[in-house]
Length: 394
Image (cartoon, helix red, strand yellow):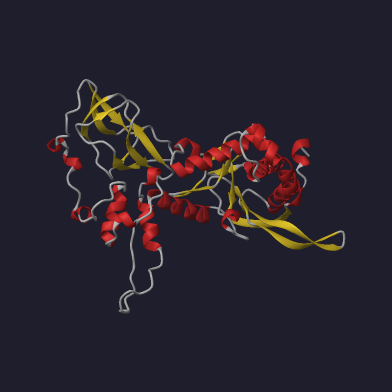
């Protein structure tokens, strides 16, 4: 029986996606749930598994094709037996030989994505010289772009006065990020309020209990979990900061879905901790650790990156001292964390050294007044400087 392989139903926020690289050829056997091809959306890379075991008899959409929800991309014969060797003539027109630029790719590179091979070929770079960050060391197009962006080695030949440039297309994720950031700046009245937080009480608490916490819960005790808890406590006190704008309406959310920005080989992604107010600190830390691991592996689902009522971004992991984060629409606010540094502060008339972190909260001034913006950030600061507040709900 011939069955069709379909693009999965994409969320409303994702209109189309790009097929990256077929892992099977026409005539090859496939196992049920075996990954046939990777699908790149503007949020994440998904795997499309075989719905049934059989033989891949037709590839309807070739590498690089743009597809939408439930499009047919291939066909599998569940009753067929794989031939000893794939018959090349059976490949569809859509899988015709690549353009000359791709055929000119250097020899080797079997563990490289087609898009990576093409960019490398166009730039005259041997794809085998590029370090891969994908699953199993696979070379992604971002790896080639990063390789090309590295400063050139000291001149080997005599200077010619040339000023070389490299032009590479944005990934779908990068293009979508650019679009949303511009949308946010154009549609929101963004202001940012700042404060500083003394991290010593929280650091002392963490140092005291981190070993037992990890032993009991199987996850490391970090700082992000406390900030998620502190943010939820502040949002409960000032619901407008947890709201969003829909046309001329203000939508107050009776739930707390907190986005946590994490890095991935494809760029920054923001998975959502759903109902964060109902989770324990250990559950939040486990969720964050899981997000971080799967972001590196490219295994986050689209649904995990959709929605959210408030976002936390930690530029401090990269050494940032201060920044003004951009709101993630349609949310109305975002918290920016930064690097913790020893600074001189005055306590009880004495100058002492304390580990200080600068906090920044950007907000949409169309619906959030300065009072609520400032007080909600102060509430986060107070909770971090006195973690007992989170237990006592005060």
